[in-house]
Image (cartoon, rainbow, N blue to C red; front, side, top):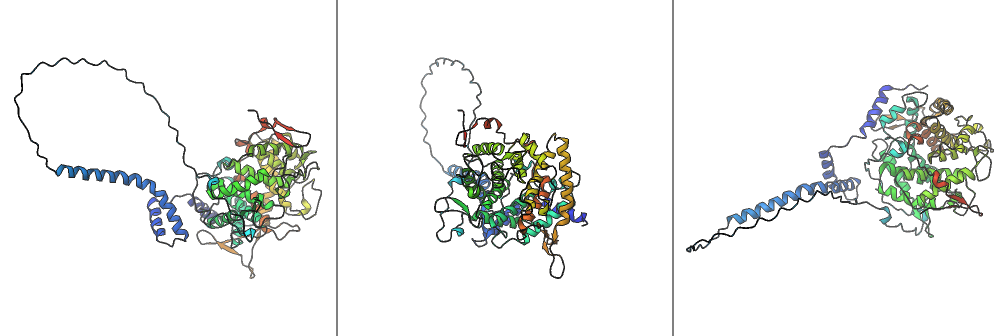
Length: 558
């Protein structure tokens, strides 16, 4: 069992807190002047130009009045030096006549005070106004939509409060990893740090991660964001920045106008996962390039919804297969986009139709099925989390799904696939189901006024997860048996580690590592949705009707 070095943990916490310290004004000015002297193509010069733009307004506010006062002083001084001779003629004044009495004008009433409100629209940068991306000419996968500086280090006041409840920083992480049956502990956080450093070590030169690049990169970015790591982070900032730039630059349009990502898988799961990462990245950075990219891809997901309310492979809007696994990533992306402040045409109607589909076509016999009309499977956790995230935690479908998952346990072994999964030992990834189950049980067990049974189930699952995950992470070793290390923000070597499922897909350690690490960050990644102002659309769903063709239509009262 690994011993936790308290001093090292204190150093890490101090290091994390340093991320949120602002640079002094004069230090920023010195950095700006230094950067302006660098080559125009360098990152330092571009950051200096951004800083100069920020300083123009306050400088003009000071200089303009000073210049105006100086000009006035000069004009007045020059006017006072000229001499003007005036000829005066004295004449005899005739006998004065008495002045007529001037009638005093009547007093006028003082007008009452009137409060005048002046509305001013703050200037905004609309991603819609940005130039559309030209379609690829030779190789469709090579067209880019953003420059290499798409994710400059822009500090943002937005910290996903609508989703996370609080900022994802060292203080919050420390609060929720001090131990206790409901939370993490120093061992879980140490395992997370090993995983983050392992991901940093294995990032490709183009900013992506091995595997199906948009999917692997999207999962890696979500893992860093869950830990509060953004492009401004000292240790992982460059890693996150390069990953986000890869995702943004991978987006292009096909000849028919369809928005796609370079290198995605045939069914386009990677497109959904990449969109999820872009939406959450915008929520935590407010970077306009991330928003523009997220809007393009999110719009396709919304338009690609089936007429019955679900989703299918290739984001095919004509199919009514309603694949639960595919819909899970689509709905996570839509939820993240909505919480980040991205509101697109058709988004609310899309959510309403999805809820109706989950309740009718994808739910049967106490659980959620793989495709419409089938029997419950391990994807029950996927449907359950989707309902919880969209504000439907108290529905009978969620309550029955939680009971369906009662006997599940965390595992990396396919023989422990959850009850209801018909393709046992088929090579499926057990962590795929655990990723959803962890979040479902956390949402139910940690909700305000949670039922005692749900609280007990979450504590049991959490105890098993905390006993298993930190002790099964694989510490990377060199050929001579020494630990593989990477340097932290202070230049100190730190160990790295990863997880691998015991299934047929042993060549996807990035996905396995991200799914496990995200579970160990569930304590501070999201608050239970019942503590938030959730996306309540129950009254609107009552207006949904189903016609004879099986399509769900939305009626809007005006």
